[in-house]
Length: 360
Image 1 (cartoon, rainbow, N blue to C red):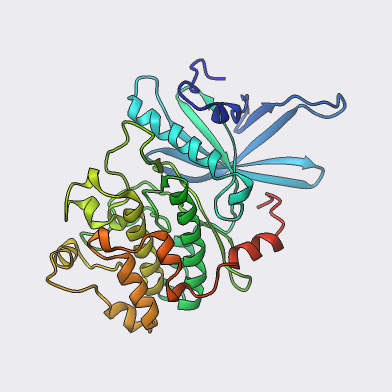
Image 2: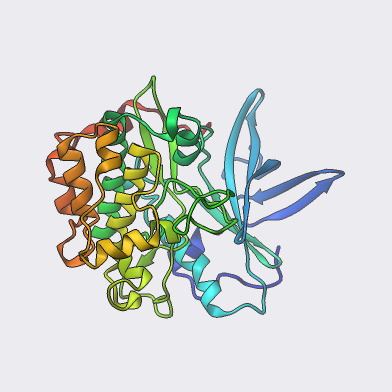
C-alpha cells in the first residue's frame, strides 16, 4: 500500500470505491491482492489478480490485463489503467485522476449500463493510481477500422455505432459532463500530414463489445479528460487530441478556453464518424480547415460522396461539424436528425438481450 494518501480531495462515493491492495512478485510473475470483508467464514476474503500482459503504454502510464480464477476453470479479466502520479507533481495533474474517478463512478451506475465501460474500483501504490475497469477483448474501434478494407465501414454499420456513441455523449452532457477527447483511438503511427496527431500516447476511447456478424455494440471509455462543467476549478486548459479537436479549440475562431465543451464534443464526434465512413481525415490539412473556418470553402463532401454516403449522412456530418459552434447541432438535436432514424431502442435492446458477466 502506498504511504501517500491519494484519496485527499475525492468525493465520498469515490473514496468508497477504493480497493485495499497489496502486491506480490514471484519471480517474473506479479500479483495484486485485494482483501475484502466477508460474512461467511468459509469464503476466501482475498482476491488475487495476476498480471497477464501490457495492453497499452503511453505518456500517462500503461493499461495492463489482469486475470483471476473465480472458480476452477473459470477465468475473469479486467483492464487496469495505471497513472503516474509522483508526490512532487502539480495539483493540476493530480486533478486528472480525480476527475476520471468521479466520471467513472458516475457513469458506472446501472442506468448507464450498456453505454460506458464499467468501473470496478481503484487502488494506489507509491507514485501511481490504478483504475480497474471492464475489459473488452475485441479492442477499440480504431484497430477494427485499421484492419477493415480501406480502413472504413459501410454506412449502415456506422449509423449503428454513431447512434450508440451519440447516446453516451447525450447522457454525459445531460449530467453536466463533457468528454473533451472523443475519438476511436489514437495509436503510435507516423502522421500523414499536418493535421494528424503527433503523439505516442495510445488511448482507447470507443471499445467494442460485439461486432458483425453479431450486432454492433460499442462503449465509450477513457474519461480522463472529461469535465463536470462549472464545478471543477483549475481545469480550463485546452485538452484533447489535435486531429479531432474542434476549430474553436485550435484558435481558429475565438478563445479556446471560452469554447463550449459540449459543442466541441460534437465536432469530435463528427470527425470520428466521418473517418469511419471514409477512412481518412475530413480535412487534409490545417490550411484547408482554416479556409473552411474563414468561409472560403464549404464543408468537404467529396470523400463522403466517393464512398456513396447518403445525402442525409452528409447533411448530418455538415451540421455537427459547422465551424461556428453556435450553429452546430447539440447532442439532443443530433439524435433527432433523419440520419439517426428510428434507432432509439437499439442499445436498450442489446443491453437487455446480453448477459454482461464481465468475462471478456
